[in-house]
Length: 512
Image 1 (cartoon, rainbow, N blue to C red):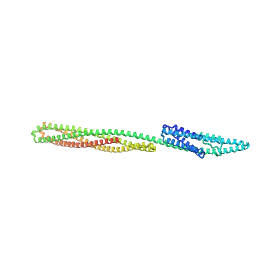
Image 2: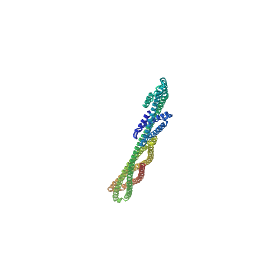
Image 3: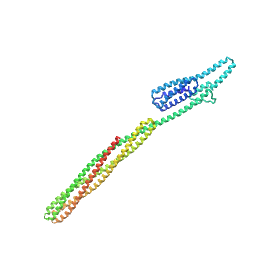
Image 4: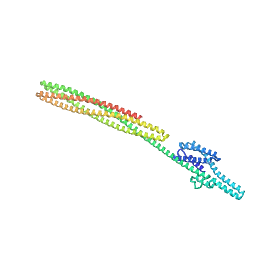
């Protein structure tokens, strides 16, 4: 009866399972199967020497087959209906055999009782006294074989069927009663072992599920980091495009400044030639005092022309000065953009490091999950390779940005020198303008003071030489400015190449 109850309970537990059943139900079903198998083995050992040994072997075979099917089902958690039906059919056969075995045990006890009653009735005919003796002897023999009264044995079997395994009452263990007590002790031990194994299996399953959850969380974090990395790469590409546009605009302005400097140099050369001609005229005035009046008029006209040329030169130099200041501001903004890119690349490097660590942790958790985490381990390895490639690309981009910063610093220094030289040229041009204004005033004075024309001519000659030297210095300054503009143009060209390289690296990083 106890085996039938355990078999029914195990069968009900297995039949109630489905693919959506929780892990606790699978563990309980496995525990019931182990309990049923232990009870069947104990029962087989008990009746091994009896006439029902063949049926017991068939029962054990059926039980073993059912246990194998059910255990495979619970281990794989496949939930296939075909295996469940096969298991249910095998368990039906087991249930029939278990019912027959239970009925056989009860009938065996009843048969012993009937035999005892028949023997008592037969010997009662031989005499009351002899019958009493025989009944007494048979009763003692039967009780010695059973170990206890049949009613007590039936009650004991009911207690075991209900799950009460404390069957010892302190009496002597002999006959059927002793065998039942030993069987119950063995059954209790097997049940405890099965419970411990079930608990261990439950813990291992919980650990595996926890590892899978950690692996899923790590995968989600790695995907989030990858999306953030792509977003930053897009921002870097935008910054690279802005940098390229700014470099092109800066190159155009430098070319314009170069043309203005060349024009200023040409105008200063013209002014120098005019001043040489004016100096010759002044010397001619000194040698020919009789034509001082007409020469003074010519000198005034030429001085006014020189003043206009110098005024134009001053305006051109001021334009170059303003353009140089704008160029300096553009170079400063370009340097700030390069620093911003450097900071962003630092963030990308940190994200790549964290992605690499997360991918490594995900691979470890997937390895702990065993076969179930193998697919995710491949994904984690690809994420780790992507993070390593990102770190390498970040290093290349960092080197490119460093080269851009160095070129920008050189260009800024060159622009500072150019601005200082342009300011000096502006100052000299202003002095030249004032000197020409003095020449005009002197020419006016010579028209009224013809008698003092010789002394005025000498002073004017000296002033003309000074102006000529100033103009030559301005011409030299214009040449230096042109060279500085050419150097700045080369630096800006290098900067544009670096910006283009940065854009290509960012595109490669996005494609990777």
